[in-house]
Amino acid sequence: MLALFGASPALAAAPEAAASEKPAPETPRSPDARRVIDWIAATGDNHGLPYAIVDKQAAHVFLFDARGKALADAPVLIGIAPGDDATPGVGKKSLAEIGPAEKTTPAGRFLAKFGLAAGKQRVLWVDYATSVAMHTIPKGNPKEKRRERMLSPTIDDNRITFGCINVPIAFYNRGLRPQFLKKGGYVYVLPDTKSLEAVFPPLHVQSYRKADASS
Image 1 (cartoon, rainbow, N blue to C red):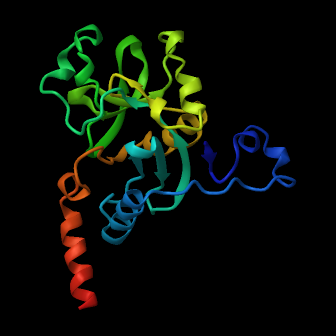
Image 2 (cartoon, helix red, strand yellow):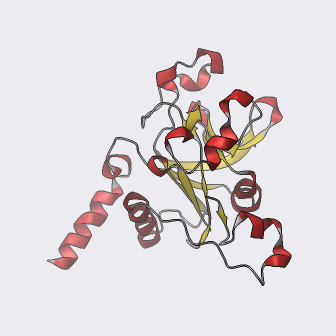
């Protein structure tokens, strides 16, 4: 669940209770997430910018500052359809024109920046060309129960969006926005079905270097 700057949601909402409350334990990271985190730290792939790692299979996001310090993590909602590629031209379609199989959250490394979306809403554009953004849960259709899905202990119900990445309000306002607002940052979206090497080719090089060092 949401671990904001090492604190539980209740602690984040009530700083005065910090002295009597223990920080929430860090959310476990999947092997793929740990591998990408280690690669970024070892190579400086973030180029001095803050970054976020979205683990689709775990329905979770991890936020880091420009120096690689872990700041926060939270559950996310992602595209309904499993898949690692955006359908060509999907960014030019209206929501009503997007078919079920096209509602994917594409995997990859994206230079993300804040900008305006429909209704003059300010969002973090992960991939503007395919209309994939990171933002809080939209008001939308209450029957979708997005908040309940995000807070549930399971991850199977976290697939509900058209491709965008929904995050909790506290994570967005207190973590993501302050870090990415000035210069943007990188968002690494881990794959559903492809290998990490297929999505992040430099990992091949890192693996070879580790093998050579141990031989």
